[in-house]
Image (cartoon, rainbow, N blue to C red):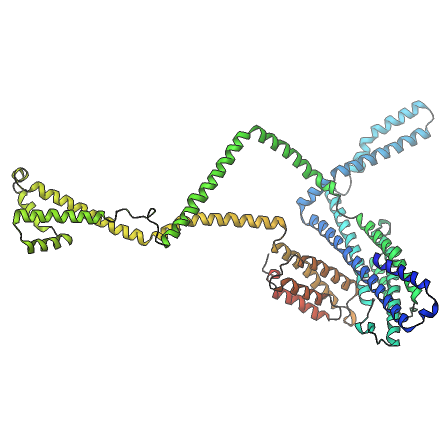
Length: 582
């Protein structure tokens, strides 16, 4: 509004420097008309914005006191926070009261002995005074604290509702201009309508400011609590009757606007802030002294412990780092690289194969040569018979050797010394070795076929552990940063519930017209919803869609049923506002 004030003063200085004949021209008259409309609109919108923004801290403070009422632990913490101030106030009041009694006794007593006697009697009566006036009160201390919190919340709520009613009155009865009123071909009748609208708006702002300065004191003054807020509200709605308001000329309008900018609006802001400050939460020093004290002693003993166990902590950190590094290297990175090697068939070193590729072949060839030599030496087999015997050995058949072995067993000593018993035994040992290697080769094939499955089973638990740790860390970070969509959804659902409740109550209004207070509270809640929606993502136009729906809710030209349908559409459309989300 400072910029508007500078423009008004500049125009006044220009008007004072020109003659009256120049101002009577049609072009200058049209420019005056546009300038007045621009200044009035700027002051009007700035005033609405001031009232609207003033309700945000009130809503925050109301929520603070409500949280204390809902949570016993927070209420106990509030008592501990404010205990030093309460003890100081109690001590000061006791000292002042005692001093007043002593001064009154000293002033009424002339003799020194009587003064000492009265003072001693007063000191002896002091414990009885404390017992009667402090300890034996009919109201307990927790109940008194709860009453204090409730009183603060109610006073702030009354202030917020009154400001909301002022906002609703100004929004409904304020400027009602269309773009065609500012076209070049504006008629004299349209110009007169604009002048009337400007005069009514200026008069309405002055009435609201004057009435609000009086009613705000009645709303928060303990000595004025018998004045009902409904009476103040009814008197405020009378201000909306602007019939018979005289049309102001250019000079009068500028004077009124300057007075609004310089005096009325700043005085209103100062009064409302000073009145609401009495019921705000305790100061930051009162709220922070307990965490600061705990943090101080915690840091003190923490630093002392670290300095005394520096070597042990260094070793623990080093071991923790080495454990984490080895875990990632041995159980995540290397198994993952092995999986890639298995898929690409390049994993020769890490294969699960227990038997070499050439070992079984060499043992079978050795067995074949041993059997063929035995058949050739003892049975004088020809080339054809040797070929058949070779094929039988490849198929695992050494029955010829077994028959010779059975024959030698009949005379074991002779066969061992001069016979073929030892040779047949060695052939059977080689055959057993070949059978074992064949079984191992079959097992190698089974392991090779499932090698990829074993690799995934080896790296699976490690990857699952890393995913769980990273997900938990991300969730904690989002909660600490306040960017979790769940927090925004809870706040928006609470505010949207209040909007829907106000619209339901507005359906009982006569002639379907929403009361000024209800409309103002809806505007305040929608403004609060906009602050929450500003933290939403822009993906798929989510934020723009929410803003568009909020504009429909605050639009007073729509019926209550249409606005209620908009709130229900928001519940259906946006998943984070669904009733199943928590």
